[in-house]
Amino acid sequence: MNLVLLFEEDFVGPDRVMLRGRRARHVIDVHRVSAGDELTVGVAGGGIGRGVVIRLDAEAVEMSVSLDRDPPLPLPLTLVLALPRPKVLNRVVAAATSMGIKQLYLVNAWRVEKSYWHSPRLSEDNLLLQRILGLEQGRDTILPRIELRRLFRPFVENELPAIVSGTRALVAHPPAPAPAPRTVPGPVTLAIGPEGGFIDAEIASLERIGFEPVSLGERVLRVETAVAAMVGRLF
Image 1 (tube, rainbow, N blue to C red):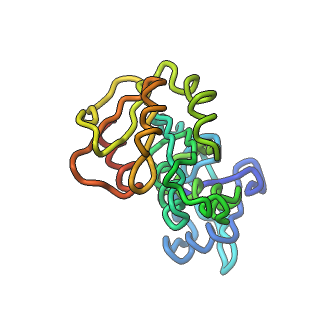
Image 2: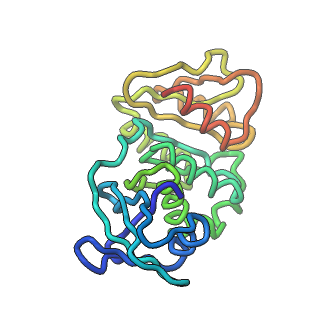
Image 3: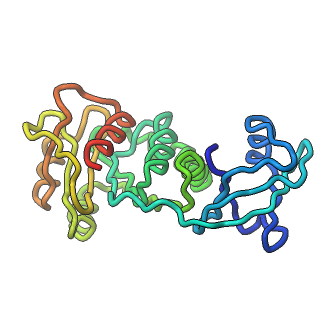
């Protein structure tokens, strides 16, 4: 936890917060704080600053808080991601959040198993927790938006053209002859398929609305690796 993310309900005074539960346990057990120690804190949707530990016990940590700077700028990237396997979903959402991605669409595709859409990891509570973990890792305070789209074709034909407008639209596709560009100026919409990639018909649908198929080379990467590799290359 590189930042303690605070919420309105944590405040017990204008500049005092009381932490309980997971965050308090982490601060006590991992950071091993004592009274007078400082931690980096941030208010959800707001600024970042420092929290000074006033008192603590086995269950709670009280801090005084002062905020003096804005959160980091968001990454100018919209991520369209075929719904990954449930055991991968948490890692992808937390990692994307930590990198500063603020808009994520989880979409269906031919190679996405139907059972994935019934996973408890798609619950609002779990997706919120993974985004919070990502913000704590990346020292950020602005929660990204996650939207679910279970029908690929209507999404691509009816919604995606407006989403990609004014951006450079790229789809990661291992067989593509064109290499992924480096350090792209301006906003990007990036589509990444499931394990095994998008099928040809899906790539054709994306190309019709302006997506460029690009590759990271001959190797086929896992979804979580592909997201990090593409973001690092594009920005």
